Length: 282
Image 1: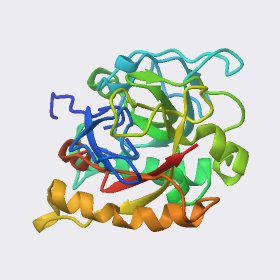
Image 2: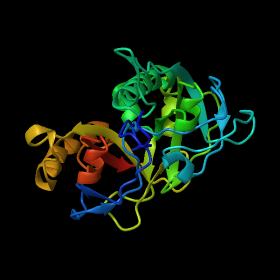
Image 3: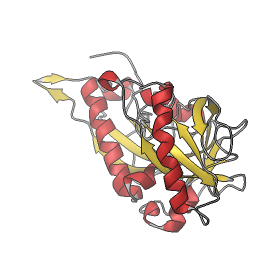
């Protein structure tokens, strides 16, 4: 049995390997070559520990470091109390293969979790794939420590979380099941920014925050390079040409409007974000 603990990679967001740079251009502002961002890429692999098999629907209060750690001790608390993570699915790992017992951190175990949790997340929060991309909600997933695995535990846990600022988890409130099926839920948990992305100090925040002045209104896929590699900044920027038309269709005045585009960085690409964001003033 392997004796290592390796964090997985990306769903909706390394969940919280929040990259420092991203590109942005468009509208009536000059296009910088890179921009500070605070968003977390689309769904991500994370694993934490619990004293025993966790309960579906349990709530937790985690720090940012807890959320990005390969394992963390976290006790559940009543969901009426302040929390920033909620379990939406608990499953069992299949660790048997050809008569052998696999390690809890084996490739097969990680694949089970990294495919099941994003699928369950989509069904839990609702909305379309595009609406989930534009949301600050994402899934994080956890499995037992090696010690717990040695004691016979073979569960995995899928949690919904959200980021509210760089290296900070947002407080979760209200019913989250099907939340992205409603316009109000999408507005509450949408992806916004404190200034036009690409300008100094702009950071991604939940749209319900007072500091939100720009909003991500659409995404555009970026074509990969050879063998799925990062295509480079030039190719990633070209994909954003479509944002102008997207913004024009949403603008009150199609002749006078502002827009922006933020392309994925190489780090974000590796974490699983293969698309850029189209932005408009909120």
